[in-house]
Image (cartoon, rainbow, N blue to C red):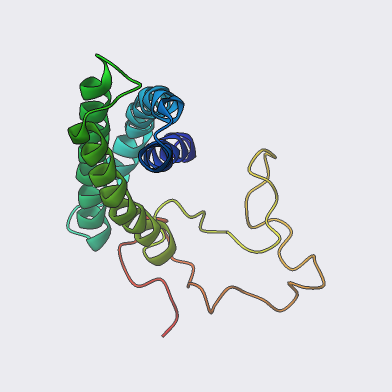
Length: 179
């Protein structure tokens, strides 16, 4: 869950750059500069568990290929924002056009890599606890996810079969939904 912080910081920095361009108020560009610095550091920190997760996916699966595209794309996103930050260093309140363009390109690519990340989790089941269900206990409890199945009146009878079929491993790389 580390990704929400860098993604939020970097996306907001792009929005602040757009506000700077429209308003000509240099304080927006200055704040964007600091947000880019924090966002790129957070992105580099988030890459470590992402890299470790990717290594746990079995080779030869669609999930492994999508994960590689997701990871390489995110490295490029971080590189574009680092470029934007470096180009601003001389005068953060008046960023050159190249710095803003690099941020916009990074923002666009982040939308694509975000979709790929969603594909990994929602479609391919990467990182989904195999016992997951609507009434699963908190991950902070020491109980398995399969505990408490159907304990809520709203979830009784809901097996999740319309979302996925429980497979022996979370990184199945196969179609996990019922046919």
